[in-house]
Amino acid sequence: MGFKDKLQNYYAKSYMDKNGDRITQLQGNVVSVKIEEKSILWIFHKLLVTLIIKPDRSKNVVKCEYKKSRWFKKVTFMTINQGNLLLVQGLKAKKGKGNGESIDILNIRNMTTKKDLVQVDGNPTKPVKQIRKYR
Image (tube, rainbow, N blue to C red; front, top):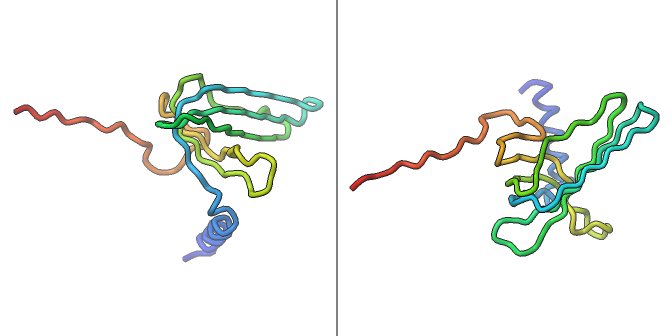
């Protein structure tokens, strides 16, 4: 195990110790999308995206937020339309904080268009082919 691998394992372990119980995954259809962009003196760019998602087989809705800031370059976000099927990976809010019902987004997988917000190494998900059996 090299130094790089040890460092990656250390960071992954410390992240899981800190946020392991808060990591969550949500799949459902988009009810609402709100994108807010701000730029301060054409130097600092902020992006705030608020998604309201209705999970599969559920009556309630879940609020998801994505916040990103960047110097000099404009922040980009993927195209999401109302009704798209999304798989959202994120963190639940900390206990005792004001936004107990919201999820902070880490990654989004749009199952309708097969696009990712953050590209993940490995094989992309492929649709399952159904085999017809004739009798």
